[in-house]
Image 1 (cartoon, rainbow, N blue to C red):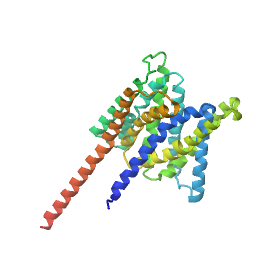
Image 2: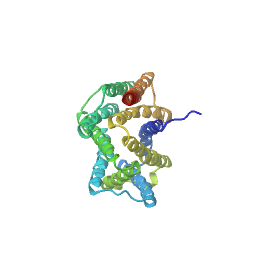
Image 3: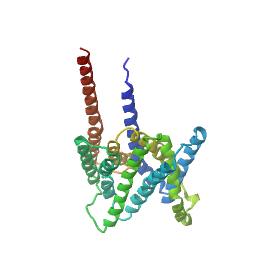
Image 4: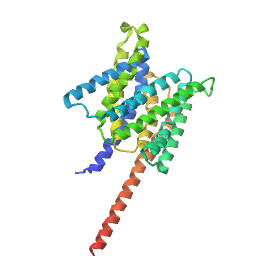
Length: 323
């Protein structure tokens, strides 16, 4: 019977978690579009994180709250300010001034920001394959966006929106690096739970902006189903999976999976919302998947080969010493 070694099982868990994160976050854009049909923006975000917090509160009541130091509480609060906090605010607000196509291209630069921050803060190095993978994924995202039949190169007065969206890029990069650091000491469940608690706290004041125009009776069942999806899959499960992966592999390698999200979004919008998907867009999505493979699986094969070579060298030296 074929058996998978323990290290192989661990790799399968890590990349399974990253694939699940990509799928759940990719479809979250479709779910958000459906939810916003009858739920105001801040109400939706607040409800999403409050419901997620209730889930983690139940888990902590059963298993106990994490023994966090005051310093770690500060780190977790700052992480929640970056993601979901300023990331959601910058991305949503930026869309008021610039096109969704340009936002997708700007958001696709997150892995580059992560590579730079992880090198500065975590002292993690990215090899040549990793850099190639990042830039290939950017090209793939560009093809995916430009392949949209409704895409336009018109810039207009969108510089303000572009700069705001770059704020989302920096927020996401700081979150990824922070989660990678905290993942060395705390479990994925603990980090995700506190992230949701502080995220709900961050958005609570903004909820009052929606109250004057909020009509509870107007909220549709379709939007409520979308809210449940966003809570269970795009928040609780996706953040848990991503934080789990960040606790086990370098931040730059985990970040490249973010560029697979627009691919999932495009396919999901095509299937669920009936939006068009061209052959050019499909080729761009395929290039992104190739970039993910190069950055992660080829790097991993290289690392395993190096590890085996080192192990063989040590074995040979030991054998010579015994002789």
